[in-house]
Figure 1 (tube, rainbow, N blue to C red):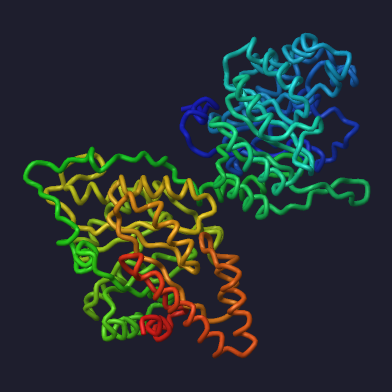
Figure 2: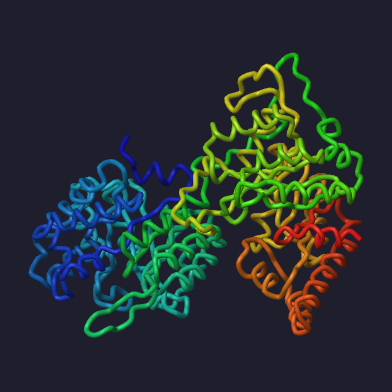
Length: 611
C-alpha cells in the first residue's frame, strides 16, 4: 500500500519529514553558483540517491528538489521555459526513491522578490508564477504540497491560492522566523498561525533561519493559536563560516532531542531544514519511535466495556491486600526496589525482607527505569512474593513489548499470582546505556490501561471472552509537576476513564504543588499514592532536577542540599532524609499512600522516612 500525505495527515499520529537537499548536494561538490533545481535534469541519479538516503533514515515524507524552481528564480539561469519539466522530473525522482514507503510533497519556496504592497509584482502575477510550478509538480505525481520559508503572509497567500486552484491535495504552509521570533516582515507566530488557519492551510509550520531552540519557542506559541496540525523543520543550528563554506554545527542528537520536545509541545510533523542530513533524520526518527506509540490511544470508557455472561468482575477491595487498604481509605506504604543489573537476586530479596520486617505494605518493582537493562520486573516480583511473602506492585512499561507480548505477560503474571500493576509508558531507550536499542511502543499507558481493564472484565483486546477474568488492581502514573498541566490532567482523565483504580505520582518535593494538583483531580475520586525520594547528596538532587523527565525539584530544596553538602556527605544524606520525612509528614494527610524510593538500593535510608 502506497503511503500518501493525506493518510499521514488523517491518522492523527506524529510523522517525520526529510532533511536538507541543498546541504547534501553542496556536500557533494555542487557550490552555490549552480542551479540546484536544474540538477533534477542534469544529475537525476544524484538527486534520487539523496532522497533514497532519507527514506533509509526513516523519513516518511520527502520534499521534491524544487524549492527555487519557479520561473522568476529559474530565469536568472536562463531556465524559465524549463519550469514545468524541472518540477515534473523532481516529483518523479522523489516518487521513485520513495518506492511507496514515503509520501512525496511538492516543495515551493518564495519568489525572491517583493510583491504588493511592498513591491511592483501584484498578487495575481505572483499566483500565475506559482501556478506553473504547481502544475509541473502535479504532473510528476506529488500527493501534497509544502509552501516553505515564507516571510511575507501575502506572498504565502498567493502561493496557497495558486495551489488550491490547481488541486485539492493537502498543503503545508511554513513561515520562517528570525532570532527575534518574528518573520522578516515582523509577523509573530500567533498572528500568522491564525491567518493561515483562516485561509485553509492543512498544516501550519515553521522552518529554516533559526535552530531548534528558536523553532521550539515558535511551536509553543503556534499550538495555542490553532487546532490545525503543526509542523517544525529547524536548521541544524545557525551556520558558521569555516573557510569559504558555511557549516551547521547542531549534532543529530541535539536536533533529535529538540524534535522530541516539539512533539511533546504538540507538533505533528517534524524534520530538518538547512544543515540537516540523513543522520539527523535517523536520530529524529529514533526519538519519534521511542516516545510516540505506533497505535494512537483510543480511549474506550470503562462504561462501554461489559463483562460476558457468567463473569462477575472483582471489586478493588477483593483483588489484593494493597487494593483492600486503598478501598477502605487506609494509608498504604510501599518502597521502590530496583531489580539487580546482574543475575543474583539475593541482595534484592534481603532488602525486601527488611521492608517486610518494618511493616511496609508492598514493594514497588520498576520495569527498566531510565531504559536500564535489569532483571525482568515479572520474575523479580514473583521471586519477592514467593521468597519473602510481601506483596509487590509491578511497574509495567509499554516500551519493550508489542501488544501480543504485553497480553501474554500480563495474563501469565496473573496466573502466577501477581495482582497489583502500575502501568507506565516507559522511558525512551536514548536515556539508557544502549541508545541504539529499538523501542516498540505499540500502545501507550492509556491503551494498556484499557487492555488490562478488559482482562478484568473477562475480555481480550478483541472483545472475545477469556473464559474467566483477571483480578488486577490497576494503577497509573501521574505527574503533579508536569510542565503542560492541561495535557497531564487530560491524560489522567483518560486513564481513569480507561479503568485506572489508583495513581502513583512522580517524586514530590513541593507539597504545595501536590496540594494544588490534588484539588484539580479530586473529581476523579481515584486514590493517589505520593512518590517520595530521599536525596542522598547534592549531586543526586541536581541529577533529579535536570536529567530525570517529569521530576521537579524546587530551588529551596536544592539550596538546602547545597548548604548541607558543604558540611560533608553524612550531613547531605541526613538533610535529604529530613526533606523526605518533612514531605511524608505533610502529604500523608492529603493522599492515600506513599511510595518511598530506596536510592541506590539503600533500604535503610527509605525506612528512615517512615520513622
